[in-house]
Structure formats: C-alpha cells, structure tokens
Image (cartoon, rainbow, N blue to C red; front, side, top):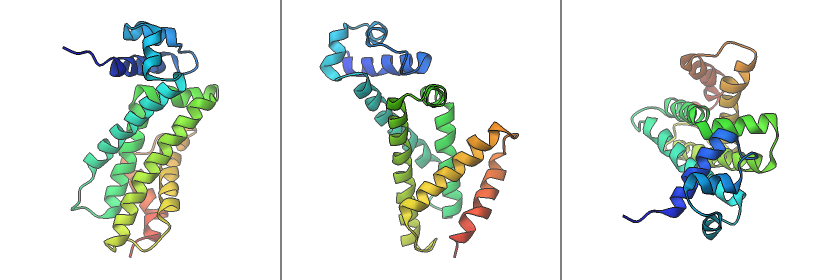
Length: 190
C-alpha cells in the first residue's frame, strides 16, 4: 500500500492547526504528527502558509459539497439560498479547524489566517453568486449585481448567526429564514 505523504502532511497540519491554532503550530509539530521528516514537508509545501492554503482549498470544496447537498432544484430560490447559506455557516462554525482559525483571528489577528479566511469567504460568495445568476436566468429573481448580492447575503447571514449571538440569545433556523426573507429576499422576489 502506497502512503500518500502529501495527504498525510495535510491531515497532520489540519489537526495541529485545529488544536493549537496557526500561529502556535510549527513545522516540527506537523512533521511529528505526520510521522515524516521535516524536510519531507518541504518537498510538497514551500512553507506553513502554503500548507494552510492547501487545507483551506480542500475545505472550500467540502463546504460547497455540503451546501449543494441541502439544495433541491424543485424548491424556490429563496428556500435554497437559505438552506445553502445556513449550511455554509453551520459547517464553518462546527468544523474544528475553521472554528479555531476564526478564534485566532479574533484573539490574535494573525494576518495569514485573515487572508485564508478571506479566501474562504470569497469562495463562498462565488458559490452564492453562481446560484443568484442561475436564479436570474430562470427569472426567479430580478436582475441584480450577483456578486454584490452574494456578498450581502453572506454578510447578513453572518450577522444574524454570529454577531447577533454575541449579545442576544441565538435565533432559530426558522427565525433566521424569516428575517432573511423579510429584509432581503422580498426586495428581489417577483
């Protein structure tokens, strides 16, 4: 059986980043967890930032798959966009690595982590933009700037799920959907 050293390193780095955060993780720790020499890591990755980027790229694929799974082509755009956005943010909060990285940005403000989380957000915005463009083509919603609309949709969801909970009791999934439709989608609906 051939061991995929690259994947072994990625898995070890993800575990280390999840446990200790990006800043506190060293290449020595990753090598030890991966059961490889430190030099082996550099055969596949230039540095720790490159490794984090590879992990986030893989995570983006997982999040998109999770969002696609909850969407149903037989349901209206409003229902599907709610399902996808809720799934994206739930995945982000539930996944140990992203939760740790978000905590690190809040507590330490690590620039490299801010950049990869921005990459994650823009990938999700791109995913939502594609769904908006498809809904416009199907005439489910009126013409709009799909990228700005996707950006606003994601930020509204973050505000309702993450920011609101900092000072208030959490909103139910149903209440979030109701508020999202009231404040956002009713303006787009035909």
